[in-house]
Length: 310
Length: 297
Image (cartoon, rainbow over all chains, first blue to last red; front, side, top):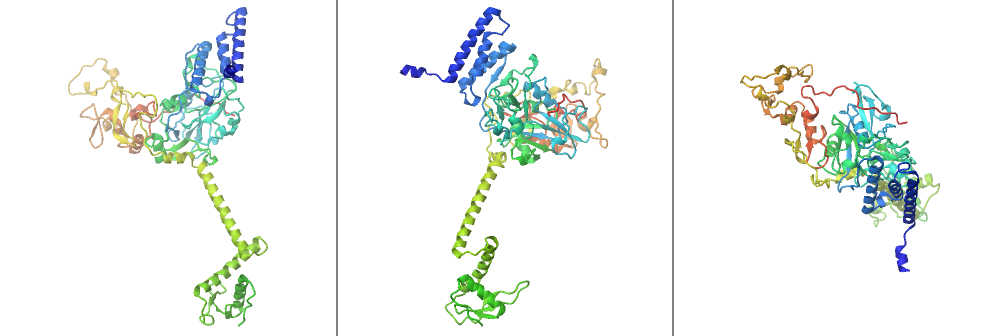
């Protein structure tokens, strides 16, 4: 009786084991009958099925995270024939990311948008972009008065440019709206999405007052040679159709101490990224010495993204 | 002069006293105390004060008199409030209870509002204000961040101490300049092609256009020279630019102008002025944007 009790497995594990065994068996039969290549390899099926039964990212132990990472890397190797490196670096202590955008310096070259699309493996087919640059006339305050789809020689005289992306609110309304807790705020202030836990209801998209979230209406299509192979589980790993994604301050870069892709690509130095809890950081200098404002501050979302004027 | 009946209630008694003083100059209350009508002040009907002849009852003290007078005013005030809001009068005990209850409710409301206000409105701002402890630049992120080898230490301190910038000399293809620009005669083949006489200086505006020698030293071509005659190394070009663009230099040292190189953490390495700006033509040019956006809605 005791040995029986010890061997007891829960329902989820039983289903996962049974189903993957069945699939491997079934795949073996099909490959045996119809030949390899028609339905893919049995290894891919097995990996995909085990992926299907994994836990929420926050509930996983480090061991389970390592397992799912190795599965994802294997899947990329088998299906796309590329070598990727998915990491699960956690938040550093005493770090709170903040961003400042200089509306005087931005010239609207959109280098940041291009860098972001490339870095974060965004869908090229639907032209998904996390960042939007609005061309606004002098005196306009809100980006909904500006032109977000300009395409002419920049900078245009009498205009200024305002970049808008996810503001990583400290009181994020999207997190409150999510019915499956697939999105949450990390201790370093970044709001992330567990892509495998998202059901694609787009409640968060409706809750966000800044249009900060993007939905994958189709299977994201990226040319193989353009895929960023250095990926993060909560960041730029490849998404599938029907799930929400958003700017994560390039979590795969920022947690390694690097600047975000947009800040690094900016040719005019209009973008300042840094640690808000470090009194010596550039972002703190901006907040203490410049005229700063936040977008829709009256909503109480407490964004960690400031605009400033030279 | 009329005498007030002692069986009336306290408040009513004083009310009556007040009323009776409207008609009479003097009035005696139930203690036997003599009251006198005060002189009318501007805009007021007059006030009551104890008469100078306080001899009828020597036991009464002045504090008692004051209390009596104040209680009249208070009771009139409270009664008028009660009549206004409740339509009836209450006894002193009831009024006290109500007043206490009011204070308790007011206190709870104020306290709870401040709790809500502090928890929501001051989130990030409060966190930033509390974070005054200096963080370790090098140990902030687990991974050791490689410091680029080709950097120079800036001759200025930012809020966190010394910092580094990108060099300029290694970017100039034919440095040292003195290899050609010297007193000796040098024979250079293909000199027409490598001459930099084609450089257009678009710097300083129409009013005060800059010449080559505004920045480049005539004595030693390997250095720049400020208007005060200080020789400046090409690597420390920020000192050169900063003599006019002092505001930008201040922002650059602090971190609001320019940008860091690759890393936000670790030793601070920032781009030099000449990393982004062409010193001969520093303004950013008009050009096509790198990409375009499609409408969201």
